[in-house]
Amino acid sequence: MAKLSIKVHDLEFQNPVTVASGTFGFGEEMTKFIDLNKLGGIFVKGLTIHNREGNDYPRMAETASGMLNSVGLQNKGIDYFIKHIYPNIKDYNTHIIANVNGSTIEDYIAVTEKLNELDKVPAIELNISCPNVKQGGMLFGISCPSAIAVTDAVRKVYDKTLIVKLSPNVTDIAEMAKAVEGAGADSVSLINTLLGMAINAEKRKPVLSTITGGLSGPAIKPVALRMVWQVYKAVKIPVIGMGGIMNATDAIEFFLAGSSAIQVGTANFIDPAISLKIITGINEYLDRHNFDCVEDLIGALEV
Amino acid sequence: MQKIVENHEVIETVHLNENSYVLRLKSPVEIPEIHPGNFAEIQVPDTMGVFLRRPFSILDVNYKNREISFYIKAIGSGTQKLGELQPGMQVNLIYPLGNRYTIPQGLKRALIVGGGTGIAPFILLGKELKEKGIETTFLIGGRTSKDILLTDKFSEYGTIEVTTEDGSMGEKGFVTSHSLFNRNDFPFEYVYTCGPDAMMKAVGHLVTQKGVVCEASLENMMACGYGICLCCVTPTVEGNKRVCYEGPVFNVSYLKWQN
Ligand SMILES: Cc1cc2nc3c(=O)[nH]c(=O)nc-3n(C[C@H](O)[C@H](O)[C@H](O)COP(=O)(O)OP(=O)(O)OC[C@H]3O[C@@H](n4cnc5c(N)ncnc54)[C@H](O)[C@@H]3O)c2cc1C
Ligand SMILES: Cc1cc2nc3c(=O)[nH]c(=O)nc-3n(C[C@H](O)[C@H](O)[C@H](O)COP(=O)(O)O)c2cc1C
Ligand code: FES
Image 1: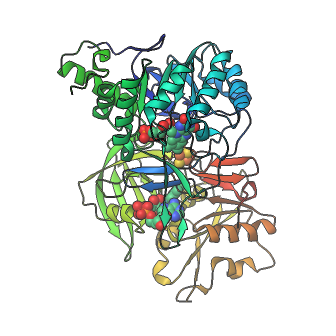
Image 2 (image 1 turned 60 degrees about the horizontal axis):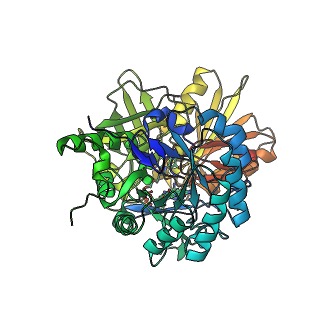
Image 3 (image 1 turned 60 degrees about the vertical axis):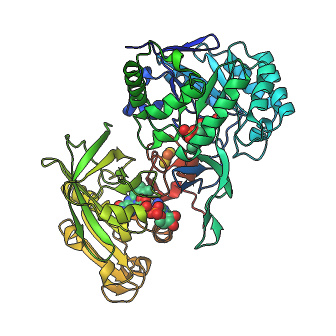
């Protein structure tokens, strides 16, 4: 069996398969389906400083090979997480990575400072790419100066692995990646959802309460692969790839494009055990192609 | 609660009218305990435009023969396709999902109100009420007599009342205009409802005004069905709750239904 462990900055993952923020809750619901200890890591649902109810229903629209969501970061706030959720999940034998959100730089700092104190959260993913909130969110992630400002501010208060999650809703993703690398990010993860829209023609109305939402699923995979490849070539820090990964072959493609680790998102909604099946499939691929370790696949695209 | 994710074999699809059918499936493993209100997420095989699973209430279950069935109305590509499945074909199911209708201790008389495919959970509910010796009345509404289905099943567990909008069967009108709501004595201590939102809201309103508890099973659009995406929420007195996880059954006075 090939070696599956990989490193993101100085954090070692037992395997490169993790689950994407917002598509796996805080893991607790999924214990009825799979052994979470087998995952490389869990990027938990986006956290904010205060309780957020999220956007009004309807928040979801199915689209060709994908879906739009406008959940809008519903969560009970960082203090609730620390008090009521963290104690239940901290002893999983997998990395719990918090997804940090804010409307202002001060919000991001406040949430990060609290997370810095949690022993069993070895990394944070700074979400500067949520398309579903009115303030902050993606606004930070679509211009280089604001992405630099928020990354820099969080870097100053965070001692562990800092991953910055990039928005695909930009003209030049490589520039954004370089900007946050320069501001102190240890890694970048991409892509978040693509801004989209669905219309009910019969009713002449938008499907989502927010009119627009974030597109995910296989529909976005070609865009995600292209962006991972562009970013891989532009930065020195490790890239965590995601966007439409439905099976092991998709995952392999992301490694070849330059991902050190991958996140499985929307696929969790269709098969709750898909992440574990992907781990098995990666193993089979490595054996079949005589690779000793998954690391040898990273950026190994032959062009 | 133990959940299964398994391919099931189609035993048969029994068509009840132009667009409604019962899908009977065989599980390869022992079926875990199913409660009234529980639902399953069914993966629709190879259908253009159908990406996510589709949620359906569990109609009936036979543990001994490992059989599970669903009552489905074809309203789009997914439900159309499921109706075309042939015996022997495989479909993947996840269940049991969601919470259940509650049956309080000491309950003597219950009323069940439903319309359309909303009647699906009522076989299991009726069965359990009967086992507990609770006297049950089913009030089923539809547009015409053709929409009034499965009443032979319900009659095993209680008495049947019907309303149709065109008066072709039972009393004419909506379920909420049925005479049993206008009697001076409303003999029911508990009301269960499932069906179109507008119907459930009207029933909930009417019944709670009488000081009677009403439980409704909601059918919000779902992406996952097991609590991880937060797409299916409904506003409640305690904020947004997941219909697939904290629900689908809610006490109507807990809900903040927008009109
Ligand atoms: C908990 C639960 C239990 C259910 N139980 C049953 C059942 O026992 N029998 C049954 O026939 N159906 C049931 N439904 C509804 C069923 O899931 C939908 O009819 C089905 O998903 C439609 O799929 P489709 O591909 O055929 O239609 P689509 O092509 O997806 O949709 C066709 C049209 O219907 C609308 N629509 C689809 N789903 C819903 C929904 N949930 N609420 C409102 N509008 C919707 C769409 O917006 C679209 O306009 C249940 C739903 C839930 C959430
Ligand atoms: C319902 C839903 C909720 C999401 N919530 C978050 C979130 O809270 N924070 C975040 O960074 N990304 C969130 N995302 C984006 C995913 O983490 C991921 O970047 C995106 O869905 C692309 O991957 P996929 O195509 O595999 O789903 C969410 C996605 C979905 C579908
Ligand atoms: S449908 Fe995903 S949380 Fe309810």
